[in-house]
Amino acid sequence: MKRLLVCLCIVASLYSCKPNVEYKAYLHDAQLFSNTVHELNSVVMGNNFPPMIAARNYTYGAVAAYEIIAAGYPKKYQSLAGQLHGLTDVAKPTADTPIDFELAALLSYIKVGEAVTFPEGSMQLFKDSILTLARDKGLPDDIEKASQTFADSMSASIIRWSKKDNYAQTRSAEKYTVRDEPGRWVPTPPMYAQAAEPHWMEIRTMAIDSATQFLPPPPIPFNITDKSGKYYEQVMAIKNATDSLTDEQKHIAEFWDDNPFKLNVSGHVMFATKKFSPSGHWMSVIGIAAKTAKSDYAETVYAYAKTSIALFDAFIQCWQAKYTYNTVRPETVINKYIDPNWRPYLQTPAFPEYTCGHSTISASAAEALTDIFGDHFAYTDSTELEFGIKNRNFKSFRDAALENNMARFYGGIHFHPSCIVSTEEGIKVGRYISSKLKMKK
Image (cartoon, rainbow, N blue to C red):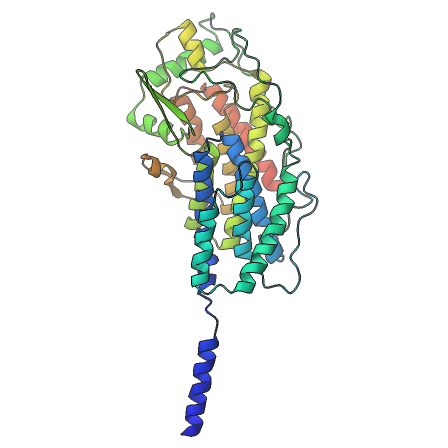
């Protein structure tokens, strides 16, 4: 009897000393990482960043998180050091330290994601809430400290790298010169804003060789007087389509609008409404795909990193084209030569028409995601639901990119030939990056 009591006491003692590992189930849930991306997406939206700057936040944060995963799982993932331009080396974990690599990846994503453009601390409350809950679930102090230390080291590596991408220099670069010449871009209503980021092609690319590697052919030459010519044909095509949109076409245009700062004007009243930018929309799609595929934490981080890089370089490629050709928007042409009262269904963004940014980056992202999850990957895109726009279903990422192609045309902001060329160029960028980067072993 005494021996039984002793055994029971030993068992009870061992059980009481057994650490609570519930924190692992919480911190290693891939959905937590996707929720963190959504949080950064919301912070970026709140700061009114245009889509290419938003992509910069997402990409550097995702690379930081991925490098930690690669360090934690070296048999499955390979570092991007030596593969991305300028990234020669990154921090390494200290041997024999109790790092939780999923936690470290999350912390590094937060730190880098908010630091590359806006002041650190924007996501502090979100980070604190995660750590508080993890501690309540048994996160040991030594693991938290070791994970935070490695996250800080990796963050420092990636932030140093980010500061050499020419972003700071483009902040003070010469402004775009507006010239009211036939066929050349000029500001559009209602904001009449200056051209956005006219030096973005000078940002260091990550994987493609240069901004001009996939420079598209010239657009259809401006000629509004030849009513049998291709230019007049594309002008009338967009006017006629926008004037007779079906409800389905309106939904497609609205779903892919992704205007991060729309100025609404009603009489003397003006107010802005915000949504995720085009790059933010694809951040959401990555999370939806990872959840649909039941990807684990590491695979989810990998998906964000690879797709973000495709978005980053696609913006640079597209902006090279935009400010090489400086083409006028449909709204300007139609107002000046055909109908002064015509307005597109969507608000015209503040940069040249050719090529289409959303079509380019969407095609690039679709190629990266297809490389990760496979073709014919059906999913429901619920990104716009929080902005009051109903979901859309897609049979594949490429189908989604093609629908986006039509969306910019239905919206009245891009000629359809421009969208077609943009999709083709985006595909080239996405496929090049997918084949060049060696990430999974």
